[in-house]
Every structure is written in C-alpha cells, then in structure tokens.
Image 1 (tube, each protein chain N blue to C red):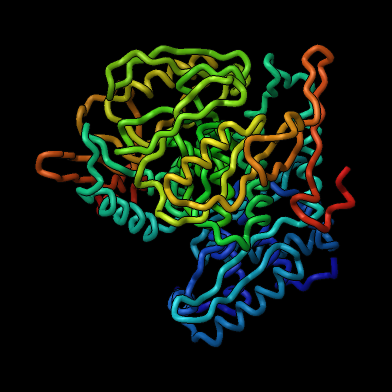
Image 2: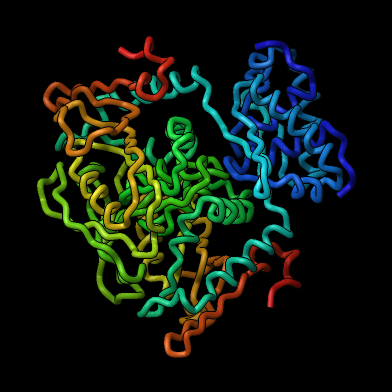
Length: 281
Length: 281
C-alpha cells in the first residue's frame, strides 16, 4: 500500500478498530499494514484515543505485555441510551401490539439490526468489566439481541435448543417448567458448546416467571460455568418474585390488559447506569 | 460539543458511518452534530471517500434529493475474502467434526461473531445492488449469519419458525418435506413479518436437497415476495440437482465419509466475485 499520512492512518485505524470491537490488534500488525515504525502507531493511537473520548464514542485501551496491543471499546452515549429506551417503551406500548394470551408483538423490534445493535451495546456496556467468556441464549426470539451483545464483547454465542438435534453431536438435556405454559419442556445443548469453568452472561428477550432461566442456570451448572448476569429486554412486573434472582431488564412491563387494550412499559435506567437514577420513575 | 478540527471531524464521521453500514445520514444531521456548515461537511466527506477507496475498505455514497445524504458501504478486500474462505474450508475439513448421519459440527463457527460477521459481509457485498428489503432465514443455526448479512445491508431480518408459536399472532403455515429427514414438517411465519411485494434474500447455513428452501420459496410467494437470491454457507455437492435453482454457496461439501473419516470442502470464489475465477479449483 502507498504510504499514508498521519491523518489517513488515524482514519484507517478508526475504521478497523470500530469494525472489530474489543478485539486486540498488536502494534506490529499495524506497523506491517501501514509500513511505519511502532512509534508512529503509538502516536496515531494517542490521537485516536483522545478523539474518541472527546466525542464520547468509546475508549481505546492499550494492553501491555507479549499479547499486548490496542482495542476499541464502543460506548453508547447517555443521551442515546435514554432516547433509545424511551422510544422503545413508546413503540411497544402501542395497544395494537397486544396478542391474545398476554403477549405483545415485537418481532419487528427484535429482528431489526439497527435497534437490536444499540440494545446489544447497552447490555455490553453494563457487563464490560465482568470478563465474560460466552453469551448464552435460548432459541429463538432473543438470538439477535444475544448475538449483538456477543459481537460488541467479542465473545462466542451459545444457543440452547428447545429440542434435541441430531446435527449437533452429543448433548446435555435439561427438563424445565416453562412459566408461561406450565408445561414440562426439554432444553438441549451440545457438549462441545462451552469450555469448563467459563463465565457466562445470559441474554434473552423476555422474562415472566423465570422458569426458562432457571433451566438455563441448571444447564450452565452442568457445564461448570458460572452465570455472571442475566439480562432481558423486557421483564414483567408480576410475578414480582421470579424463579431467578439478580437479573436486569432494559424495560419493565408494568401492565398488559387485553380487555382495556392497554400496555404500559417503563425503562430501567438506574439499573443500567447509576448516574441515570434521576431519569427513572 | 466543543468545535472539532477537520481531522477530528473526519475521524468522527469514520466512526459513525462505520458503525452504521448502509444507513443514510443527512448532511444536516452532521451540521448540527458538529456545529459547522454544509460546505465543511461536504469537504470532510470528500476526504473520507478518498481515504476509504485508497484503503479498499468500502465506499462512501452521496445520495442527492430530499431524502439525500451520505452512507457507507463496507467492503471485504479480495485477499481477505480468499483467506477467510480458505481458512474456513481447512477448519471445517477436520475429520473430528464428523457427526454420525453425514453432518459436521460447526456451531463454533456459526455462532462466532467475528467469523460470521466476515461471512455476512461477503454475502452482503455480493447482493449489494439488488435492493433487498429483507433477509429471510429459517431457525436456528443460520440466524447469526442471516443477521450479520442484514446488519450490513441495513434491512430487517425475518425468521421462519419450525413450529407454530402463540406469541407471534396469526401466522401463515407451510408444509414441506425436509431433504435430510424425508419427513413432512411445518414452517410458520407471522403475518406481520413482511410487507407485500418485497424483495428478499434467503440466507442459511446448509443445503443438501433443498427441500427446506423450496418450502421457504413457497412461504415467500404467500407473502407476494420475490426471492432475489439464496445464499448458504455450505451446500453439498450431491445431490447435484437441488429442489431450488439459482443458489450460491460460499463452500461446497465435496465429500463426507464417516468410514474413512474424511471431509472435503472447497470455496466457491468465482460465484462470489468473477475476478476470483482463477482462484477456484
């Protein structure tokens, strides 16, 4: 490649690091790519770091040692977090979304990359210091949200299946009682999915009683994994006592009334960012 | 925000556009964000455009008219495409991946955001001019690849379910014969999932006989959607005659032999990029 000017290198670094959140790039990788010395790259990184902090778009972290290098940790701005969750509450509170049985239609949200990417970033921001090894979800509707969280944290996704699949080799199977249907169901996970003693974050779309999540906890203990957190897009206010503790929901479904045609959802700002306490109702 | 210098604005533009592929940002959005005139933003965009082309990282397109603005179309470099698919062929050809029944274990690949993001980019690059409205997939293993393709093209994802779900409202259901199991199965899609007369791209992980895809085609015709293309990560060489025409696979599974413990996979470079014909075997 033709030799680049400093500004061009900073732009190129911005593009490469932004496309690969939380991935460590060695200085020598960039030295080779741009055909310059390490001291030049250090200078470029310093400029980038300052700029990203000034813009409040994320952090550039330099890692020392033999596996050292530089990585980009994207961040959602406080204002954007508030706006995103408030918009979402309004959209999802539309009574036309009510589906018989106490559900709301939200596939258009859950499968929209632009929205779900922001929500994944919000979750990743919350758990960035927890040294997560895997994001775990249970099929199907929460998969996009879980994947976007995994993408920001740069860790693999694990999808628990609701049926035993012959195409995944030998599996561990757990019976659980779904809170919504009160029926005994089976969840299944390929034995090769997780390394032992991993730290996992469970991400899903919806929690009512927490029965499914209890099953996921049990599955994780079969793999000797420790659950560092559980995060869902929406949890219902009732039952207040869920079958799992220590979960975070981005939104709370305060009420869904099919007769009255009314849905009330509220964002949980303070659980996501202590500085946002004053925004929470 | 404190007023930024040109270089800083170019860096900020790079970050924002890179994080939002194929999303149109109006010039006035950036004028407001940076508190500068439109002529300054035009200058910044020109610099960015030149830089991205020089680096071969993607295109910046300016759209004129009332809905006008600027968008970033990410691109995978030819060398990276070749490297990615060759590495993948080698990894997946490991005989330890063989699962009884003629399958190979590939969850570690399919659920790895870093790999799947590159593959999604390869698919999106191939179909960038086709004005796709939705990416359609059928649960479960192809969802991450489909989502990453949707993310690059900035269009919604549609996930066809293999069972009828009460949480998705009224659905259209199609019976189909799975090529692998030869059993009649039902696929189901919420009526609200697709607007009529849409152009869709089908993305999935694996194709053997094509029976499932034939079902998806039928489902799409129920929604009056036209299928612009079908793209899978792996298609088996045999049966050569699939139940759907006009599909692309990133890799071909030439052979899988449980007795001999042998898997042979080859990349399909020329189907992805005519210039890569010479790299194909």
